[in-house]
Length: 492
Image (cartoon, rainbow, N blue to C red; front, side):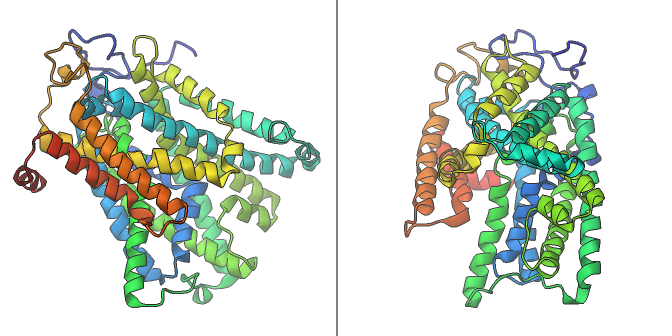
């Protein structure tokens, strides 16, 4: 790790405890607030414009709903995400602090480590999975440019072929080189990632429409629900599915919001990046997917496979490179920045953002993501346990900041281990938040496991909302906030 990378300016905290403070965890100074509307829009483009985002958006049109019903569901779901992102982003924007430091407000200066570890584990695992997915595009690119390389795909070394290992390690090192260069370089990179994917996606959509004709294209790709009430239920589930898709970033959006210029820029960037961008990209994704039904005789929801099936070497090369870049973009936004901060928060005296990022990269490879994605049971168990805790943590953090603390924070208190500090609580741990997390997480994980393993009790995609509501309610109750105060705070 080179030492010449310039870190963003910070606002110094007098008397900050070394166990809670380093350059990367300190509040961002005004001159570090370089993220305007376009940078936040590009960040959301990077998050949505990925192979996983494409597949997710296209899959919503296979629920049996008509095109306009899907779009209504999408609009409701993404507007809810927009509102929630603004809520979780405000404290970070106001004080310039990342997610692990925000978590100290509710969980305590030591208890925040628990919240950081859970979010960090989720990020590390999906960082490895996304790196593996990107390496598959690298493999397609290599075979296209050098057909004889296909001979390197017939062996297996710990689950990957020789070419598979080359592709994975290439992506691993390439991403690491960019990620370790600092947040300003990351901002510039994602300013490029999201928009460039649109160029290829618009080209794919135009090619599909040219092949099929616009009039013959149907946006209803599955059998409709049997009754109007069933249709409403499917629409509601689709909206909640969108909220669940953004669950991880609904915790750590503050890692990016802390560098926002002001609240107006954050809200505008979120608006264009979430409702506007998500709906436009989803429409393009379904046009391309619906086109594959007519052109190839089957619905293909993997854009890398689509460009491979087109068969033109130039298209394959451009498409593969584009989706490699896209995957790197979402890996930065959703899976790298948060664990880097979360790991740094565990030992600020020794670990900074860049070292935390290096540890994230190493752990993501040790997960062996190619084996992880090959096991549906492993994915189900992981999502059920770790994913289900994200909702309760969001509910607790938001309820604490807006309803318990009433948005009144002395930021210096977030960096002190003094027993009289506002966020020291009981030895650095807030019992109310921990009990609320335990109760809400037990409920969320239980419901998720029951649904995953075929129980009649199946809340489907409502688990995140149930967990967030339970966490917020329990935390307010344990913190002595009356229902009347909650209603008054909700109306502010």
